[in-house]
Length: 569
Image (cartoon, rainbow, N blue to C red; front, side, top):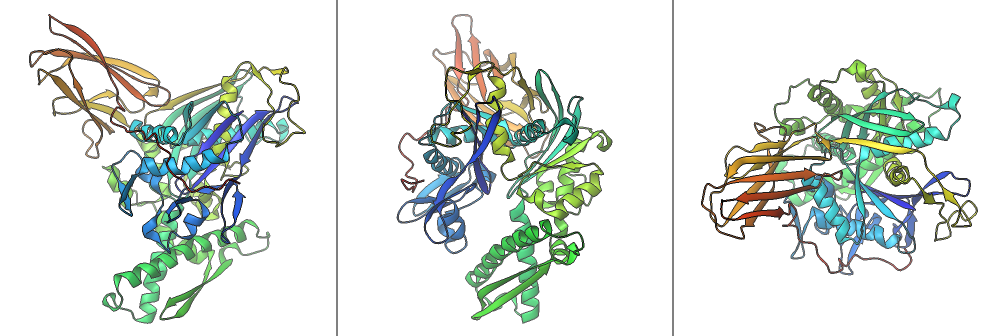
């Protein structure tokens, strides 16, 4: 049995896969226990990736989400946006980075799996995650108690789930014929991130081949940005209608009003999406409405909200409107967030013509919103395909991966009582999978190295497929007789003004050398985008080859993280 975990910005999902007695590959979402609104323990198919730090302990999931506005100082949300950075949260005199928050979320997931035996786990990340962000994800998994972790890209995992769904259909009912190479633009718009990839896919009798042709750089754009647009717009209109001036309210009052509107905006979005999805053909979709009351919003008065789809689209139109700006820096794209610019820039960066795209594959929670699909269709004019459930497609696809890697496996019977009627009764029955999966993953950013605080040198160019290895012979010289210091950066190239320092590493030599002694560097990046390096130095008297642990400055806590859990998860 194999596990797949979609460690999401706003929600996380766990899936498992196994082979049933009829040699069919089965995938199931594992429900995750958490406190509901009535403070009772209840299983849900997804876990809000939020942590509430209470006096009783650390609470993960729906309770944290419920309290994120009521007690915002004790709730951490959207930690995934800060993976690979030095950003921290200080709560009750204790400091947490994104890696540790992710570990707390993953440890809650691990608790759910206490009675389930599995061989390995695949954890997904955005295709544009750089090695430092992936390193934090892997370390968070280790801190949570997961071993034998493989990293896969979210767009490819979701696409694999769709291919598996298609394989179960009659050939005449399939939406896509993958027997010939199809170029798929994967648009994964979730609660907090927007991941775009262009992937060539082919499926034949020998297996599946994924080849990434373009990867959009990691975008902090998702459902929370739509909520923020609506909340800001509603607040500005309310101030105008009530004649409220900037100095009439304290910062605390304004913050509380805005948090209430953010909460309302999310609920309105969900209500509208549900109404549109269930609309009959004769209904006017643009004028379907959602209603919501915010009690005690201002001066002990409630605020009654009634918004149509047309209203919602007007408030959030900036997130659909591409101003055709030729972004010179990554930060410029962040300041002009919209879903069309993300797609356009990905195609431009990799010189991919729009007419070369065969299908748009949409996944992520926001892909269910009609206007998102409408705007993407208008821009690309390509057919849209979607998984049966965009919310769990990534996790399902992740759990399937390892089955294509195994050539001779035993059919499994789940150990926790699920699907007993379909599981294999005898472990002696073997299932041979002739299929394989080939996944050509690409680096969205270049990896650069700087030794003497000069201009960093690209050692692995962007668009490079992993795994990859190389060496620099005699290109660097020592500036100290006792050791060296290396800085590793991520950027588009050596001239990118958005270049970010990933790691600063030091190595002490086993012997003293003359300053200016040349040395060689050998480096590798594996399928998980983990980098390893060796330094080879020879001063004519001594020779040494030293391993340089790129992740040596990461401290893995051995003690229990102390996540608040219940025995009956």
